[in-house]
Length: 226
Image 1 (cartoon, rainbow, N blue to C red):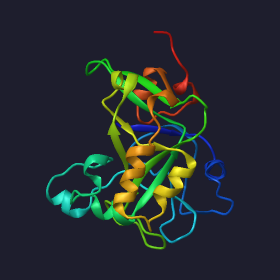
Image 2 (image 1 turned 135 degrees about the vertical axis):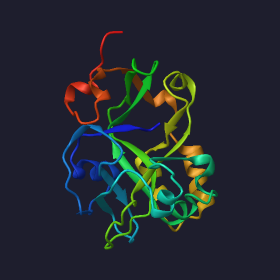
Image 3 (image 1 turned 30 degrees about the vertical axis):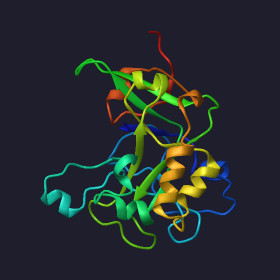
């Protein structure tokens, strides 16, 4: 996890859910999608300049040094290493952000026969995924720059779908996560202690049309018979 998400609401809808009365919507060429893949540029919420901002930012991180070392595109970061590991600790310290979404996909089964599942909040509210970025406001996004989603070990019945899950926070905790005046230790504590557990979610099988990254249609998040 996490390899595909859905972002089907307007940016202002995510902002309202966050309680952002005033937000700047900048730098994005975005349309609703029921199948957002890495490498695309979904919405990212942040306060990197002390303001409430929503930008369209590439999903993935592969700077030149990673290219030189033949490290593939990184789309997620394990919470267990994000704060202290050399790969992401700079982003964890000063680039914490939120990916607003409606849900995400996971797959089970053997290669060539993968069954997609859709996971969302039982309340149908947006999910606010902890993320980190090296993007900075008012600067051109450099080749290989973008964001990664922070993941933690799955719990409860979610383990049957995947052993990892995105760190999903409530709106209030997401706001704290984005406050880059917090120390890395404080932010890590929020992610560890306040991430929503499996009891808040539901998951079900969906059409294998999701397996095709170029396709996007509302039917992709509809439950199918087992």
